[in-house]
Length: 309
Length: 250
Figure (cartoon, rainbow over the protein chains, first blue to last red):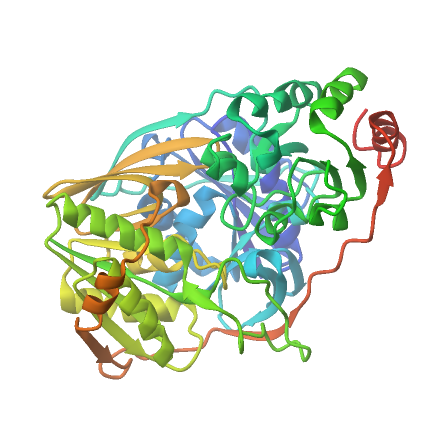
């Protein structure tokens, strides 16, 4: 009984999400293989082969996998899917994009964003933006799933090295042409992967004031998020939005500044390990979920915070 | 050029969700329902493409119980020309929804299919991708910009940490993300006009689609509540607690 993990990487670095996927996969099957699909990704392959408990690393290292389309990735996985009882990808924009194609072609369901494995066929997943948790049982012979990797610990490097097997190239998709990919050139960590997130709400008052968060974020090495109200008011870019219709984050520390705590925002951050709320309204709902609440004017509290960090 | 846009009836995004006391699901009996916000964006995009003269006809489609037709009327009030309603009673799994939509695609032969990236109830984020796979079409998920021409569509996609641009040969499937557009409000005269537009009714049987169950929901529960926290008096106390008690900063 083997499960297949699709590695998350950028062709240079194996992302921690892959290690969390291995943790989830080992709860489903006795043996776990990792697929590394990329271009000139040898360092990733080496790192993956050293993860404790991994049997084989399957490598597809080809030019057309530098920026693989969903069609190409799906074709690659479908070529080896029959060997596995489980196929797991991270619930990132990559995993969410290609894995449903795999499931559809296998004529099985996909189980999205699991947060726990109960048995090899039963999983927990959040629905209604995390306002409810569903326990679901799959009757498919191959379980295809995306995993919310922040819900699983990362399997460390072990003492053994997995066997490395090369896969043949798959054809590029003929209907899709890759044009470009631009990553935002922020020196800050990515919102969904950051260990610390500081978010601002409408209370910041302006796009200019929103930058008051920058200095604190710099000191903490934090990513910056925003409430929907702040985005709608034009204070912050849409891709910074944390919430039901934005990004779901679960950092070690989440600092909500001048955010009232609407349901739609809470859905995106309430899995954070420690929540801090700074708000001048003592009755703001955000205080009901905050581990540490500070009733204060942000224009006084933020500079103080920056000075003390 | 014909555009097919799929819409879903979901709980209103601003309504508080309550889990049923017997843990069989979420209580929707008195909940306000609406069109899934991402589907609204899909409808809006279709209407804008038609207004620009790039599309000639917009067909809206939904799947569900009778009341789901309200969302088709809504789509038609926003600018869809006609609708297809697939009558089912059950809550369908994404793979089954994709199969039904694939049958509609077969029948209608649209050049572009627009869907929301996910529904805010089941949060699956699967149907567009599955539909593309079943129809052997290219796909662009999480669209933040759509540039349509006669034989292709260039789509900017929101990906983790940045943006990707793909060019898809038509016919193609595009799923919408938040930044794509801001949906307009329905106008009363348009709501009246929409009442006269046509809804064609199908069943899975009529479409020749056999539905299969893959997943059983064993229970639906409230997430564990967060334990009540404390109020700190000042910034110094906050920093002290974060360093020494929570140990989340050094």
